[in-house]
Length: 364
Image 1: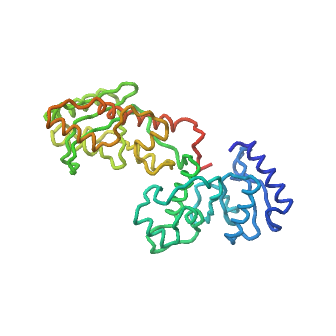
Image 2: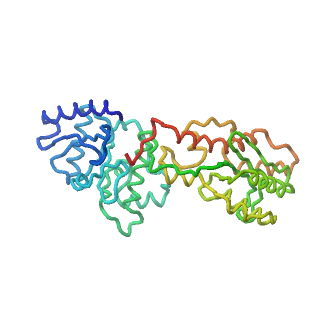
Image 3: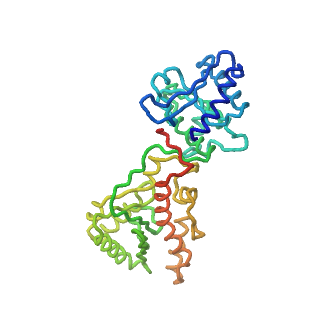
C-alpha cells in the first residue's frame, strides 16, 4: 500500500475514533514500523482497543473498521509487541496475532486442506485444537505454547500465512532468493519408472544455459551412457557451472550421480559442482497462493505459457517406455514438455527478480 492510500485510511479511522464509532475506550495513532527506520513510508496505523486481552473486543473493533470502509489486512498485537517494535507481517514467536478475516473474503472460499502440506493427519490435529475452518485458523492464539498436540504454534502461524496468501492472492517474500553469481545452468532429466534412485535409468537430459537450449536424448536404453557422457563433456566446457534443477529432494542431482557412477564416468566431478534445487530455495524464501510448490503450479501462477499439454512426468516416462516396446516415435509434444521444464525454471527466477505488485515483503 502506498503512502497516499495509507493517509486516506488514517483520515477515516481518525474521524471514526473521534466520533466514538470504535468504542469509547478505543484510541488510534500512526507510527513507524521501526523507530530506527528513516523512511517516511514506514507508517503503520494502530487502533488501540478498550481491552487488548479480549479477543472479542479486538474483533468488534475490526468489524466497525470494515463498516467504515477499511479493507486492508490488519494484525492484532499486544502492548509488549509495541514496546519491542514487532510489527513484522510474518509475525514473531510468542506474539498473538488475530489476523483479519474480513478483508473482502466473503466470496473467497478456501478450505484447510487447500493449504500447503495439510493432509488428513494435520486436519485431525487441527480439529483437536478446535480449528475446523479458515476462520478458526486465523483467530487461533499463537502466543499459546502448544505441547504434545502434534503441531507447534509456529507451524500454525505458518499456516495462517499460507491462508492469507491464498485469500489475498499475494506472494509473501520471507527472505531474499539467494542464487550464487556464476554460469547458471537450468537442467532437468527424464527417467524410467524404477522406484530405486540408484537403479533409475536416464533417457533425456535437457539444459538451458543463457539462451542456448540443448537436449541429450537417448533413442533407446543402450544410449544412456552416451547422453550422460555428452552432458558431462558439455559442463566441462563451461567455467564454474552452477546447476539448478527442480524437485524438492535433489532428485535430478542424485539420479545423474548414481548413473555416472554406474558407468564409471567420473561421478566425483559432477558431485563437486554447485547444485541448487530451486524448489527448496522457493520454499525457504516465498509463500505462494497455490496448493504447493510444484514446478507447474508456481510457474503457471507467475505467468509461464506452457507449450505442452502434458503435466505429469510419470505419464511422459510411460510414453517413452511404451514407444521403446512398440518401436513408435515419441510424440512431438513430449519434447515440448521437456523444453517447458527448463524454460519454466528460468521464468520463475526472472519473475521473482522483478518488482512485482503481488509480492509482499514480510520483513518490511
